[in-house]
Amino acid sequence: MPAGQIVKAISGFYYVRTPEGEEIQCRARGVFKFKKKKLTPLVGDNVEFEMTGLGEGVVTSVQPRQTELLRPPIANVEQAVVVCSLREPDFQQMPVDRFLVHGEREGLTIVICLTKRDLVSDDREVEQIRAIYEPAGYPVLATSIHTQVGLDQLKEHLNGRVSVLAGQSGVGKSSLLNRLLPGYQLQTGTVSQKLGRGRHTTRQVELLPLPSGGQVADTPGFSQLSFQGFEPGELSDYFPEFAEHAACCRFRGCLHGNEPGCEVREAVERQEIHQERYHNYLQFLDEIKQQQRRY
Ligand SMILES: Nc1nc2c(ncn2[C@@H]2O[C@H](COP(=O)(O)OP(=O)(O)OP(=O)(O)O)[C@@H](O)[C@H]2O)c(=O)[nH]1
Ligand SMILES: [Mg+2]
Ligand SMILES: [Zn+2]
Image 1 (cartoon, rainbow, N blue to C red):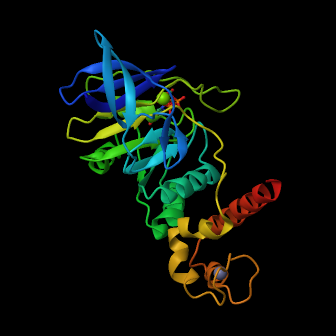
Image 2: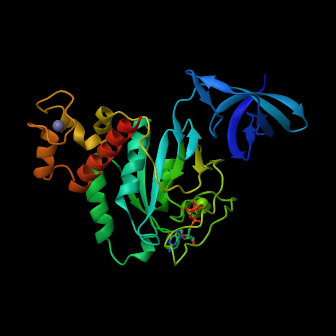
Image 3: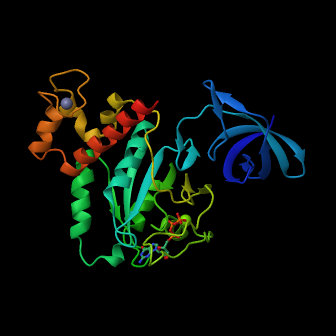
C-alpha cells in the first residue's frame, strides 16, 4: 500500500506527500485507534493510503507517533519554537510557560523566539527574559524581519530538524517563515490596534520543507492551553530548573507548595529559581487540582 506523510490538513482533507514528492488529497476512512485512544490524523503523521482517483485517495492507517501536540495539532515534531512578540502584542510570560509545560511533557527540544525586536529600543527587556529562561536551559533568540537580526540563529536551530512554530496570533510566525523559506509567500495579517492581538490569519497547520534539510510547520495562533489529563505530581517534571532541587525535598511526592523541607521553595527564596516561574508553577498546579475536583 502506498505511504506518505500528511503535510497539510484543511476541513476534512489530508494532503499526503509521498516519498516521490507527489501530493495526494485524501479523506480519512473510519476511525483510527492507537493505544486504545480514538485518533484523528494529524499533520506530521506517517500514513498509508489507497488511491481512489487521480491525485485522490483515502488514508487507511496511521503509524504510531513519536510526539503529539494537540495545540497546535501536529505529530512527530522533535522541536518547538515558542514564538512571542516583544511588542504588538506585548510579551507575556504566562502563555509561554504554559506551552513549555506541554512541550516538555512531549519531550520536545524547545527554543524561545522573541519577535519584533525592532519595536523595542534597547536590549534590557530581552535580557530580562533571558534571565528567566536560560537558567532553565532554553535558548532565547530575539528576531526582527525588518532588521534581519536573529534570523540566521533561528535558521541554525531549525536546520535539519522537524520543528513547529507555536504562539499566539499576530506574533509573526508566518512572517518569520517567509524570510526563512525562499519561494513561499505565506499570508500574514496585521495586529488589531484596538484589541492588541492578531486576527488569526493562518487557518491551517502546514509542514514545509527547509532548503537546508528538515521541516518546519506554520500553525494558527492559539490562546489558552489547559492542563486537562495532567496529574499534580508530574507538573514539576516539566520545569527543568526545578529538578536538582526537587531531588532534595524532604518528602517524596513533594508538590513544592507549603510542604516543610521543600528545597524548590528554598531555591526560589535564594533566587536560584526565578520567582515568576515558580509563581506560574503554583498557578498551574492549582488549575490541575481544581480540574481533578471537578471530575
Ligand atoms: N515590527 C515588526 N512587525 C512584525 C515582525 N514580524 C511580524 N510582524 C508583523 O506582525 C503582524 C502579524 O504577523 P503574522 O506573521 O501574520 O503573525 P502570525 O503569528 O503568523 O499570526 P497568525 O497566523 O494569526 O497566528 C504582521 O503585521 C507582520 O508584519 C517584526 O519582526 N517586526
Ligand atoms: Mg500566521
Ligand atoms: Zn518540594
